[in-house]
Length: 326
Image 1 (cartoon, rainbow, N blue to C red):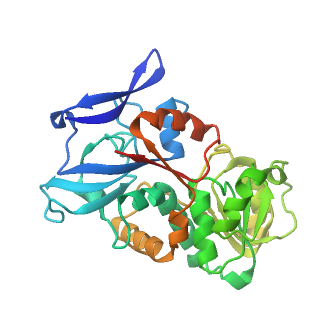
Image 2 (cartoon, rainbow, N blue to C red):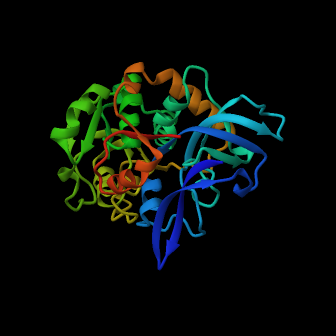
């Protein structure tokens, strides 16, 4: 028997409860994992609170991330005792996810836990950190070098943003971090490596088609008018990695930044990222993230607290990562 956070729907409302379950209730899969840690992402918050139409089939165990130990495997790539990490692949959305002490999964979705981190640290990275690494890699692939100028990170105090700030600083970039809570989050962002902090209000006015060129590159986690403002301020031959919609899924922009300033807008999806790219990203994350990152920007909670923190994260009241101990 094991405990899980289970979501059900009653009269179009999502209800989250802790339930005791049996392994026989788990969905199909060829690897059974004892989950050590999961994490709470913005998408998990939307799923648990019902604020977003993330889950369409109930009951569902949320948790798009997990790290743990293989109990049994029918796949030759994994043996009992192996440490593994999982992000994405629709787990926690249409396949029971990480907010449970057991998970039965497809081996194709797993990545061996990289040498140098444990399950908790892997979940401090999680989908958010993995996505941040893909964003940073997109800027590297676009040829954006530190000497080109400042890199802007929007939503910098969130899970993706805080890791992006850290990674970029470790690579030698000057990072301008945008947050809606400058006094509260500014000191932490400076510790993570931001060279300056910018209040989000500066990006909330409607953007003109083109504005003063400021940024050599950008990582955007917000979308909507914030991303439109960012695009209008990009340098010639710059790149933006866009991975989020915390501010909305619309994009009130024009083609001007693209056709007059040669700006590249690169979409980043971490959910269906190929395995080879995943392994490379995880290895790079472990190499780049300093020990100091793991000493800050994290809140550890029990499974029973997940629903409360889900509400908080959707209201923009969480700084850094939240990991869930199973």
